[in-house]
Amino acid sequence: MTTLRARLTLWLWIALALVGSGSAAFVYVRAEHETQALLDYQMQQVARLVAARKADPTLPTAGSAVDPAHDPEDDLLVTVRDEAGAVRYSTDTAVPLPTPVPGFSERWIGATPYRIYGLDTGVRTVAVAQAVEVRREAAVGGALAALLPVVLLIPVLALVIGLVIRRALEPLEATIHTIAERSPLALEPLSLTSQPEDLRPLLEAMNHLIARLRESLEHERRFVGDAAHALRTPIAALQLQADVLDGCIDPAERATRLAELRAGIGRIVRLAHHLLTLAAEGEPRRVLGSTAVDVLLEEVAGLYGTMAAARGVGIELQPDADGDAPGDLGQLLLVVGNLLENALWHTPRGGVVRLRSARDATGLVLEITDEGPGLAAEELGRVFERFYRAPSAHDGGSGLGLATALAVARRLGGQLTLSNRSDRSGIVARVTLPVAAPATSAAA
Image 1 (cartoon, rainbow, N blue to C red):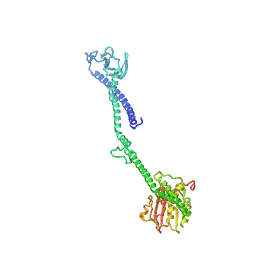
Image 2: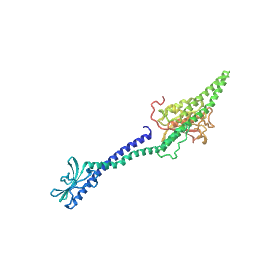
Image 3: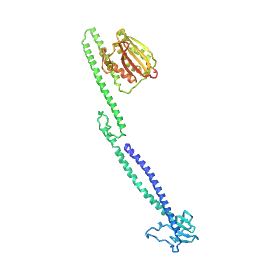
């Protein structure tokens, strides 16, 4: 039995059988005990009634049956003796009872065991006896009569339990049927209306799962659309550049066109890298090791040193904090490298871009400060949108650099914010990250 209904029914039937058996045993033992006590009480009453009779010379020497058709074995045997021990009365002259001891006792009379009650008044003694087998039959009969309703009730209750379980599980079966008939593309939440309270946590958990699935599918659709939008124009430009290059005869012009083609290919490669990074935005966060902050700053400054020199912009390092940032060097370069590249593009010749590390209550802080024109307030809220390019953005950008940096920072457990400088024009990019355990090979 693997279904919930079958297992629940089986265990309730087992519990009912155990409880019913215990109740039946208790009823049987109790009824038998009560019947024996009642028979003892009757014997006591008979003895007291006989003992209370006055001496009567006409007292018969033998009793007579009230109902000639009754079983003689069911009769009580009564013997009355006077103070001299002579039998004055006996219900069966052939079986006079022996002089009894006071109270109850069991004696064999002939081949039959009897239970005897003796009463001595000082004037006479009275012995009342009843066959043990008769008492046992009466007790068993009474016990079985009391037990019969319990025995009949157990299978009735088992049937009722099965019907109740079937009825109680109907909402669950209806929900299962509804889910089974849903289209694979149906992402609407399940209705909680008129559902039992016990099912609501399960349905709410399924609705959360559907919502996450809907969000994941929406992320995939958005990524496919973004990728198509982002790659369409650069690929068309590459095709055009290749066609122009194919028709070039002059070596100088051909070299120029070839350089443009290579630059376009480089932009496509960077764009594809950004897109692949954004494609993992909805995945669970994975942190690959950790990297020392001073190593990170030196590495990113070295990578972009040539670009800074070509643009006449200086890079100033201010490593004011020790510690390790979560993530390997490649992940962190995606964040800091994108921010540094933007800062170099927007800082005029002769300016300085500062890379600073610090620690505060939130953890590690990395700041990239440029001397560019800054951003309008409405643009600060949009620059992290995919493919959004501010009016001051440099040519050749894809509008994905900041979106990529933000996505990676969040996956590393941190955050990225931009703000205008308060002392002069320019932007301060602030990356906050939790402090990680020291890396074993940070720059590997």
